[in-house]
Length: 207
Image (tube, rainbow, N blue to C red; front, side, top):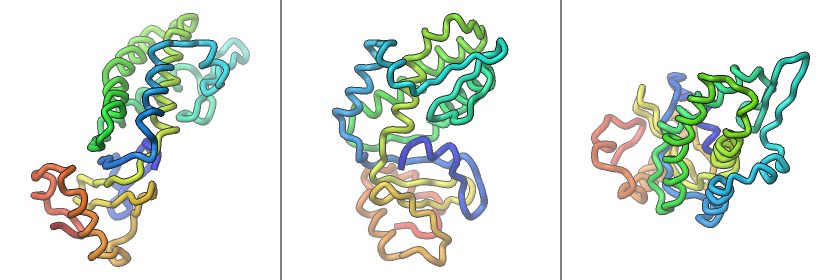
């Protein structure tokens, strides 16, 4: 599961949104996070432009932007609002994996990137947009190109949880879920979650 998917997933039972994502492990390797961090720290605009993840167009005197998060091209202010919303969704991601660099990446998004893009959005000085291209590039790389291998999606409204197994979110109605297998899934990963999580009225199963 790519972290970006959290932006469109709602609980199939009560339609609650947003959901919480608990990451237990990644298919993405630590070295790949290191490479993304390196690109961000080096701020190589030529490389970023060459990959063409962020596409900027001018039509009839107006600026339009699209990327892999905001897929439809939008006016600059609309695009930035979508990106800020995408950044806020990171607050619902809880990285419980063993990777140090993945946690560092999400912290950068929550703080440095959030502040810089919010400040740019308040000024809307298009001639300065190259100053935030590394931030937009980094956000796209983390949200679109990294892959969660195992984890758990949690609805805080109905207290249902859904396992992520081999990158696939298993978001089935209660009657189609395998109680034995899913309780074992919780037991296998219980050390990655705190006791407060299990003290909730978890549905459809708890340990």
